[in-house]
Image 1: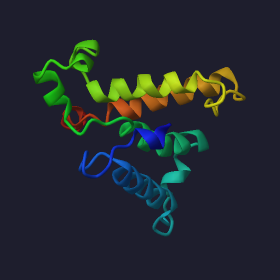
Image 2 (image 1 turned 60 degrees about the vertical axis):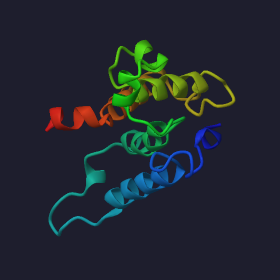
Image 3 (image 1 turned 45 degrees about the vertical axis):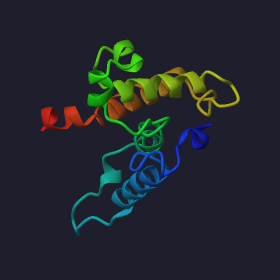
Image 4 (image 1 turned 90 degrees about the horizontal axis):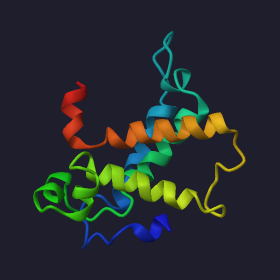
Length: 141
C-alpha cells in the first residue's frame, strides 16, 4: 500500500519514491560511515529501534504526498489543513494514515513487540516526521 501511494514523477516532481530512496540511502550512509579514528560513529549513539525508525520515517514522510507544500494547503484552506489546524499538515496526515495502516494486523510489523517498544517507536516516529516540516527546520536551529 505504501508503494501504491507514491505518485508518478510527472505528478509529483520531488516528494515521491525517488526522494524516499535517496533519503534512505543517506540514512544508510550516515549509519555506516566509519568514524574518525578514536571517535564514535552515529550508531554508537542510537539504539537499533532508533535506526529502524529513521529508515521507516523516510517512507512515512512522503506517503500519499500530493506534490504541494503545507503552506499551499493552508492558504487554499484544504480539508487536510483544516483538520490539522494548519500545523505540519502533511506530516500529521502522513502519520495518521501510517498508524491507520498499522492497525491492520496483516500490516502491523510491530504487533509482536512489547508495549514499551511500540510506544517508543510511535513517539520517535511522530517526532521525526513532524520535524520534517520545513517550517520547523529554522525554529529548531
